[in-house]
Length: 357
Image 1 (tube, one colour):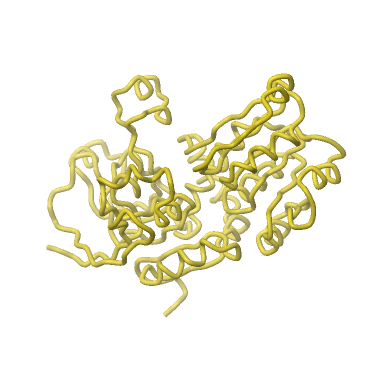
Image 2 (cartoon, rainbow, N blue to C red):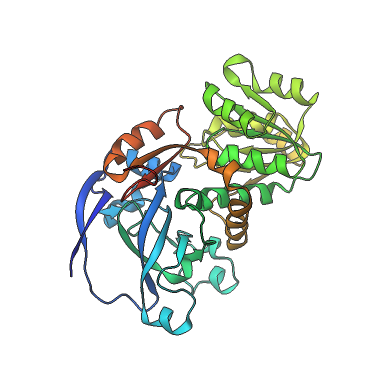
């Protein structure tokens, strides 16, 4: 049997993507795969970069066409033989997907460090992802979510896990002075996590009044817009001096430079944005101040499981990160919204949007 499968696919090495009708055949699943009926999928910054064909995404060229999308929740509809045998998942389970697929054979994989795997592949970039009705992924990449969790909230698990990983690398504690640069979904989530753990947080944006208003509504009291003063001035006003930790979530190289300037000696800057340019830093200040920069690309299984737990306990609060819900057929409009500064997290639905008729 062949079923219709509307999908958003990157078809050309150029700006844009195409909504096309593909097909899902009834060929046997690979033994380690599951087939997922996608219920909800979020638009991520990586999707925007791939859509725009930004520098750093040339690796996709020989793989095109590829269905993009990696922040998704769905229902298991088919199991490969090995998955059936080990009973790790069952048909009907609701799951989210960690998009990183390591090779399993290199030194990093053998040492239990899949993020160090140089041959890793990303669902939605190297292989078909979740902006479609059905997708096939390795069962090992699926994590079950609690029964009854709304699919749109569950689809926040991957970006929330990214934010948790960045916060883990920052190693702040209660009372730490933390600046988060960038009030997008990752930055706002990281600021929320820091505030929940008792840190003193300043969330900073640039011409981001709507996002900063949302942050206040989520309990982040101190926010600042760089259209109304320099970062150094806002940090001085909020903390009376330099800060212990900076989480950079904009992806702008200049933001890393600015973040280092407000970081105290022995402080840590975590770079969590996707950067495509170069930055210039004052090495004398960096070395003499014994400062650190830590890269926070991707996430960990521990962070992913914590994200699911947080969404289970505080889904109403974190669900406020969702600003728009659209059918998959309106995906191009969703990407247009996501490229602006008025939207936060945009969720696409391959089938019906819950609550709409």
